[in-house]
Image (cartoon, rainbow, N blue to C red; front, side, top):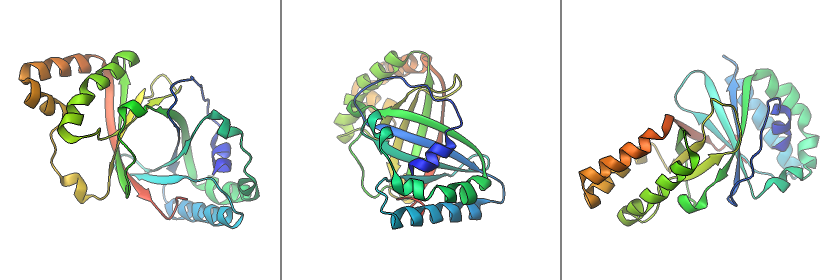
Length: 238
């Protein structure tokens, strides 16, 4: 869906070279009030055209569950920056659908890229239907990552692996997040399962004093933290 992204790239993007993890492309789309059905129909038209033209790129559509308005997040994953240079004939052949059947129903768009930090992330999960995305703005990125590395062994000993995928944003505005932690779920019911948070896990192993010290140190470095639930739309994804 590179041509959709190309039409959306009306906003500045600042690139910072980082680790060797995959690049996550994120396009947040706010749909005009009352235009949701037309917008989804336009995306389906593009998907059908793209598949008929033997397009090979893939993308995932998520709808934000909370917050103001109707907001979608379109994501795709790339191995490296060089993949942005790849030609997409199928996308070129379908670009008029973007202009005529998608963009008229869009209120605003925000585009971001982030790099996965595989050494801090969980392994790929199958059957994901929704994710809780926790966005974090920090004072010191290096200290934040060191804190994650310090806490990771506690979670691994307690549960065997991390719960989330960790991404570091590459560029963006001064008010934007620096990191996002994406925790996958297979259903709404799966979200009802009660699990200890990281501070409780550390407390059980090292005691309340150590847990509080680690939490206080971590939170002093955090400027802001917020989260949203995103639900996957298979009919809009490819």
